[in-house]
Length: 619
Image (cartoon, rainbow, N blue to C red; front, side, top):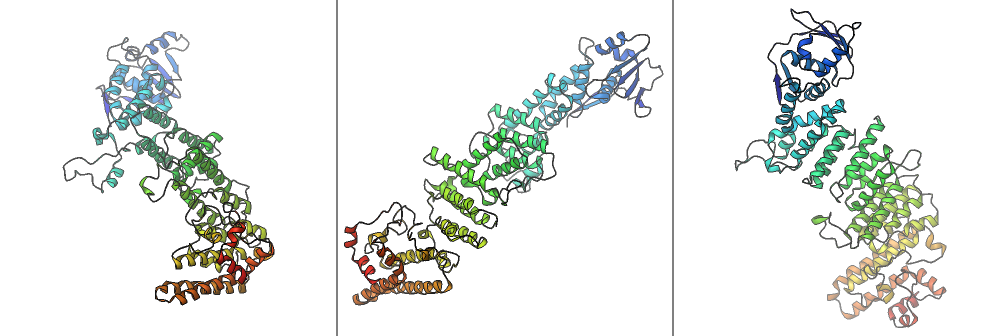
């Protein structure tokens, strides 16, 4: 820390009680200065020779008051006045970053100018500030902190603006020109450089990180911090990601419990202002702060009841970066009075905002994904969001108070997002059915419509076939698509399958299979019994056995191949006899509701498809 010593005489100021200060001297004092509650017994000559204000005050005193004057509004109070008085006596005074601004403001108040006496206190302090204090990184920060209690004097004397410019200039210089005397953040630098502050093998100093100044500024109160960041931004030489790192570090330091959730016992007004200021300072560039940080900031904004403008801005930014979010960050507690545990409506709004943003910026901008997701195509962000919401749905499904409409509405918001697997969605649906056993058949049917049975893995299919919570129609759909896949895999081709069956294969159409078997019979809406599931499992095993046997078809004779093929047809017809016979009763040879994009198969196609005619006749 820089310091300056003024004067050479020994300090002869003494104290008589807590509120009386006097100079020990052979000469009797002839002047009393009241500064606040403290009385100073001093001599006129040394003070009046350097202070124009004291000259005026003494001249204005009348005989009734004698030589006693009152100073109530001097900046820095009694301590600052004492520094100025000691300078007038020529006593030794030490100025440093902690007291120099108070002394400068007090000297300005006392009008200790060069016109009164050469080498006066104002001149000496200004030289010290410009030659030492403003050249030091650490001292500039300390001085800026002291200016807050000395407003408006420190502002009018431009001490604040000089500090801001000094700090911003040092934070903006090239890191190769940074000297370690500028920063005292040794612990972070040591950890980033292998716990060593020595020179490396090439005999060069350790590399200075771009955010070397970030933690040092966390000592500033929010109003001064805001002005520093704005000044740094104005310089235009610091990247947005470093500014974002600075805001992240400051929030973690200044907002109690921010990393784990805002502390309940805090000053709401103070910390509401802090959060609103941080949101206002966020760089305009996308991705300079993590989505996790934004979501925690949103959680704090909701808890502290910040303004709608700040919350909307956070939601807009989060929606743009939603693909990089983590599920735990979305678990925002519901407002007081809500029956649910988590704020599902907030996540619903975020997803809707993401959908709106994606539609405005087609093709989807995946710049933040970079090389992290090279396997994804242009719809990578939608795939990531779909997986994220699947996990979120599985988590909120455990809430017994979660209404079905909220679960379904959120699932339908991402229904158009193409993703290779629906296993996560199946897990969420199964969890909801498990935690809400009392929902009606129609509600059970409604929630299952979210899922595409064609996109379930083999493991998920096995679980679904044994799942007594699913409607029977869903179990049948799973078995049906498993058989289609098994047949296609065994024959290595789908060319021999009926046209309507080929359309149901994964990838055969972009449509949904939610309504593949939309019969209105009560049987299909019912939950399967244990006997139903046992029978279906047995038939599924028969199908798989037939599929495994088909792997050895190269060694079979043509007669054996034909027999195996017919056996598959018989088994499949046995499983779906109820489905096909039901459609026959309604005059439907082909499924008209496999998907909105499939449409019905015309009569000509039906006549020309022998395999379908065969299966239909078998039923």
